[in-house]
Image (cartoon, rainbow, N blue to C red; front, side, top):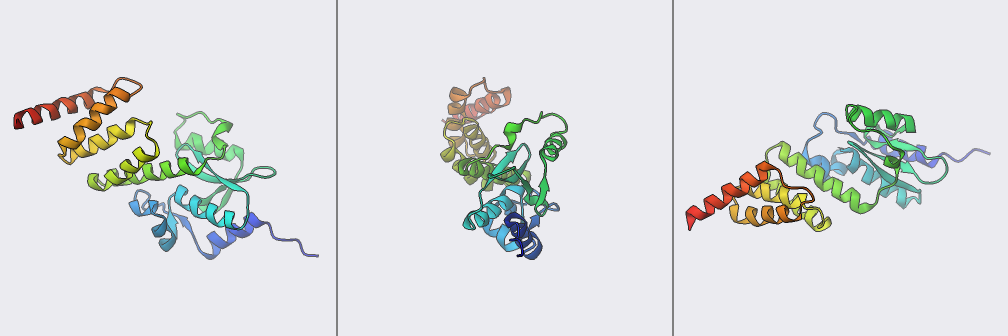
Length: 216
């Protein structure tokens, strides 16, 4: 009797060999890599957006898998039996724990020490937060400050206890000369921040206050 094909291997073959999903190495910072509809249309994207597509298909098939948020990279792992780690950015290449350790070291240039807790499954809220942060950074890379505003606003909704999002939104409005919007956000950040705000933020607040005073 013929053995049933390994479901993970079969899924990898379907997504990466037949549909040809692949990581966008040439234009990694393209904002379109963070939009799932564009990733599906173009069959290319970031590690995390490719992982979301992989997870959705796998869950529809009843496969127990989850996302793993490594520092600087995102992969998929199985949840039953001996864990298998799947690098969806590199056409479903399977990684060992040693490979993951090496990957973290390479991506961080030795600045981040690997810990097995990094291989723990992550939930939808963390995935969404990471996707929004990627989109924000992609627009900032292109100096498209106005386009970066909506992702940061969504991050504030998703993670209201994280004051750095208030800072980021305030700085974006400052770059766009929207001082009336920037000042309350930056002031609120200075109150809620766990550590004292850095000097550039205080200098920007002072500049905004001076500008507003001249208008009165």
